[in-house]
Length: 218
Image (cartoon, rainbow, N blue to C red; front, side, top):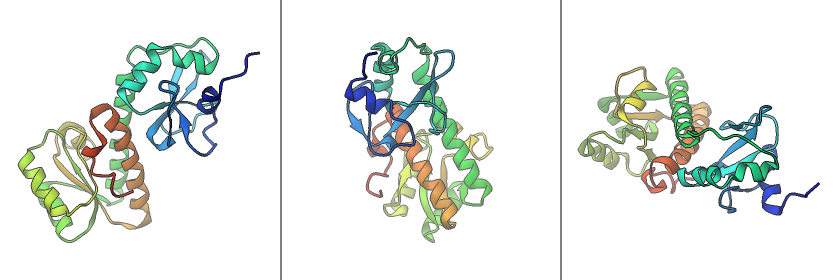
């Protein structure tokens, strides 16, 4: 039996391991926080594992449109798994949609816990009284209004990668442009950390990390 090469052993490391992972597409090592884990299903299909809970050895790919497209094009999944696998044609689009759904779910959890608000007036009030810990803005919202709240936020971490419809869906609304996650104990801090990770991964599909306003806040 052929032994896996070093980068393949790292890529196939189980999700319970620690440390960096090596992207099977680029060969570059990086923090697992900025990658997406995949496993091979019983039918030989490549299965995304965003929550990193599925059993089996993980195949890690950098969370970016280019890396995923390269992994599919170069048959990196088959090489890393040492077997023939099937990759869905719309893998990149499917992962992007899954990340959006994950973010919406997390915002929904925060909203039901009383730790998320929507609407310009509510968000402005929360910012003025230092009640917010994460500012959320629709990427296709009016730039003038968004800039006003960003100035008021005084360097607060922010993310503007969802559309008005996508952000609205998290609040059971047709559209939302301005929202925020509030300071509400350890529960909201944990949700915020998870949100920031998902937004950072989504940035690999929708824009540069600098658009998030998260990089200077850990």
